[in-house]
Image (cartoon, rainbow, N blue to C red; front, side, top):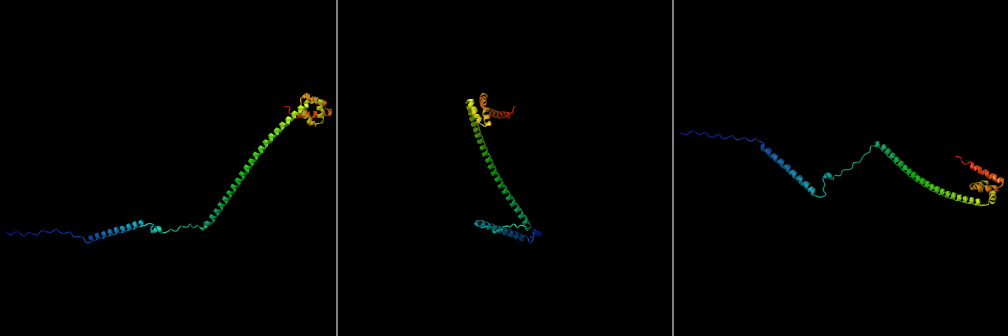
Length: 207
């Protein structure tokens, strides 16, 4: 019996490749490689610049010209007026400072003079006190001498004295001694001395 003829097996259909995909891949790879190469070159240059001493970036080496402040011409009169006013204020402060110093010197001199005057016044007061004490001592001693003299001799001496001077001594004596001297005086001398004594005692306050 004859075998039936076998049909050849159908071959699976092959997928057709889309045109252009491989080309895009190649282009992408080339771009990536170019970018990597560029980065590598820039990194190498940066490392070389850092390794070289005294090198600076071009931007840093460029000197920046200093900016100049331009004043508005309209503001110049105002600025000048402000400077003049500050100068006047400074001169006024200096004058006030000098005046204060002069016043301080004058005050110090016045205080010094007052202290000297007070010292002189105290010394003069002590001198007057000593003189008064000495005079009082002399008058007391002289009064005692007149008291111890004989009334007749003392009366003759008192006749030659000024009435005020004689009244001063008689007023310091003990009453009995003064009475003995007044008895030996002439009536005119006794009357004049009595008037002086009465007038001096009349000025003494009663209360």
